Amino acid sequence: MSENNPTKEAEAFVDFAAKYNKEREAKKNAFKKELPLWCKFFTENGIAQVLCEYEGSGDSGCIDAIYFFKEYNEDRSRGYGHAADDDELPKDEVDKIKLPDALKRETWIPQEEGPAKWGIPEKDQTVYDAYDYWASEALPDGFEINDGGFGTLDLNVKGGRMVVEANTRVTHYETETYEFNKAEDVDGTPLTSRDK
Image (tube, rainbow, N blue to C red; front, side, top):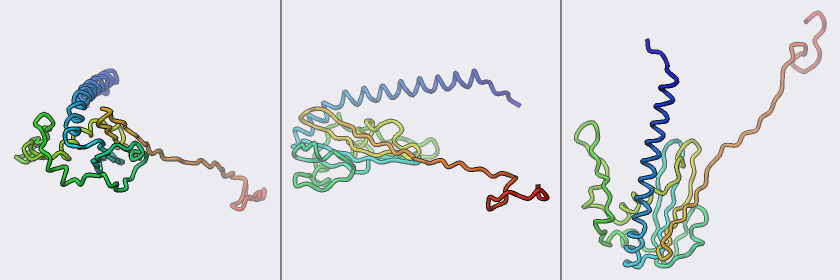
């Protein structure tokens, strides 16, 4: 029978947390490096704003939709839910734009068991696919845990910046305290001395 070793468990957790933080920092740095590439690509293709809506809960979440616009409008990113605007480019039109190799993502990952793979091979990636994968790196940590969260990722192409609006769901509860006293009947009247 093995003994629990709190010190080793704590060290393992600290090692895991350090590794996670290092990987997360590397991903964020890569994300920041690619921001100018995406802005240049969108500018060259007449896209001024890219708005993503995301949602998650119960340990699962993702970007639900991506919208591409010819003009930037800051008001579009306020809140979750999108009403079509006249300057929105249809997804199929955006996906006809040739994606440069520098923006393609390695998502074709072999599974540990068997020959199956998942993801989209780089040669088949569309603008929507590659942007979805890249923008997912900007999602707030933990947005998918428990009650989860939702929000938007708003890329201002000309301004060269992405604004993340994150909304976190929190369960609210109210506490009511009451007690039962063995010296009282169910209706609250005192019991007779014979019943005590």
